Image (cartoon, rainbow, N blue to C red; front, top):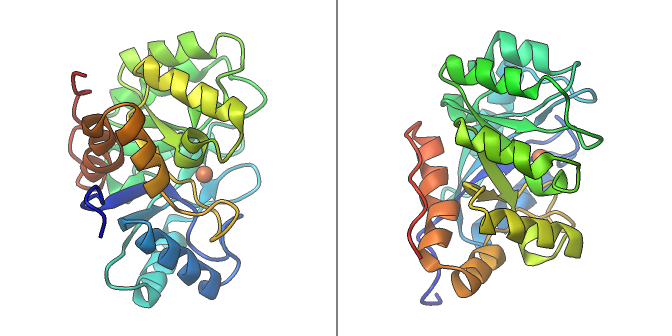
Length: 249
Ligand SMILES: [Fe+2]
């Protein structure tokens, strides 16, 4: 094992359960994904099927699928249940009606996906409503929306008010192209990032691998920050604890 191999990643955003969304189609493909995650240093994955205009989310069904998949996974990889809730007219009302059914491992943390076409005008109100109810919005891959007019300022305001943000590992490494990499780095420089996760969808094209991005951050930014964003803060989500502040570097 290499000396800088981490004590264990917790991947808080991964489409690992079979047959629920655009993740793996079969249990075998999901098992393969679990193997990839494990090999790349993950010790736990929160499975986050989409609740969106395309995919209906069912909390009970997801929990059952998670329990079934847990049986098939290597014992070294723990599997938990969550959701990625789209901020759309189709998906959001059900999420707002009962947010705890949608949060990551039943915690206070709710993973939310911005619509790619633009930022809805009512997002300030939606986030305020959730925060008032003790739910912490975690914005999934804001680097994908960074090109939208005013997005950076809005994100800074939301973070100021208590929202959090999760970068995708493949954006950081450049695997998803130079535009997303530049946006990811820029959000980091502005300290607008609290987690890095895989957003894995399969074993090959969008794999649940965090190791390369973790090492790049250790090398290029700060080992303490890598530890915070890949390990400590995701652990806080799993345990429903407050996240920690950025280290000084
Ligand atoms: Fe996702």
